Length: 423
Ligand SMILES: Nc1ncnc2c1ncn2[C@@H]1O[C@H](COP(=O)(O)OP(=O)(O)O)[C@@H](O)[C@H]1O
Ligand SMILES: N[C@@H](CC(=O)OP(=O)(O)O)C(=O)O
Image 1 (tube, helix red, strand yellow):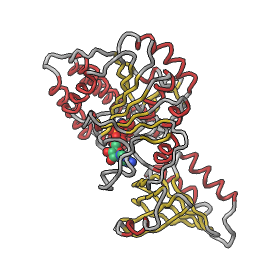
Image 2 (cartoon, rainbow, N blue to C red; image 1 turned 135 degrees about the horizontal axis):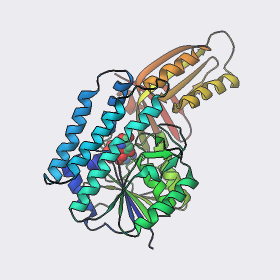
Image 3 (cartoon, rainbow, N blue to C red; image 1 turned 180 degrees about the vertical axis):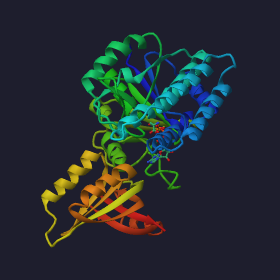
Image 4 (cartoon, rainbow, N blue to C red; image 1 turned 90 degrees about the vertical axis):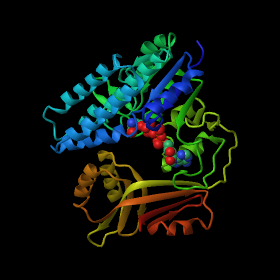
């Protein structure tokens, strides 16, 4: 059998009926076996599901957002399929199951577990609609439940892959099917060996594509985006951003680490380990070649790379007596962050304080602050932006002064980071 090709279509590329039709056009000349097509939830479905789950958790009324979500999906089906197609009933049933799963009383200690049980419904819906539509267009393919293949531990919302088990499941269950027809499956979701549903972290479908690629020793992965490829900055924020024709794995991995949301941070490593090339290309203009991320001997980039992470919480922990910050205190802070699964993006210590910029999470934040209040005096600032400039030029800081007040900065020889409070 030839080496497999992996395609990943994110939420933007399947955001409505027109976008799904466009996906089938992309596949028209490209569909082949062996191929795995990994899809994310339609548009902003995962955000809507997050709202529903949070409301259910707080015992608030979630019926309105649930109804909107149902109507949106059924309307897409009406645009894509004739009235008598079985898909309408199938999607209706998925919503009945979701409704049923939202009803029972909830275990108040296990928000993350409940979240993972419900949030993957978005990918379930999109993958069913897309597989049915491709078959309707005579682009025959098989639907596969990714939770039978991507096996993880039970670190809900940021599950770690059990590589050996996943590899085995893919070889045994997926490979034989792949010989017959292309596969459509879900990104983002997995399951533990005891059958609990898990997820790989928000925007984790790129990582799912990389997992399939690694286990299948794929020829290439293509992720289809609404941008021409990887640029040196988010083109929505920087209008003069430059497109890279190619990038070395290491440079791409660092970009994602600092927050370039075009690729999920966990995607590059499994591909780099097996030297599987990753192409990022546009689903809008399919004539463009995009950006090829692969191993480039002696790669040197001097173009500045800008990344912006929004929704940052900057916490400053200050000692309450006149002791200095020591390693034991740092250890306790890190242990608490690790236990709660809070991601830190910048840490700075002074003699009497520790400042941490982290991705905000309203529920976990409260627990962290509560734990820290036993040892420190706390100040915090929310809704901040963390700007990172790699290969910065001297004048780089000045342009961000217009963005707001720079309340923390950190410089190394190659990287500048600024925490900014918008005006
Ligand atoms: N360096 C970058 N190059 C290209 N796009 C970027 C970059 N940094 C951030 N982006 C943003 O990433 C978006 C695409 O990623 P994302 O929205 O996660 O896609 P999807 O969810 O459809 O997979 C683009 O619309 C762009 O605004
Ligand atoms: N739907 C999930 C997973 C994902 O990766 O989505 P996208 O490919 O649209 O970023 C999310 O929104 O987090």
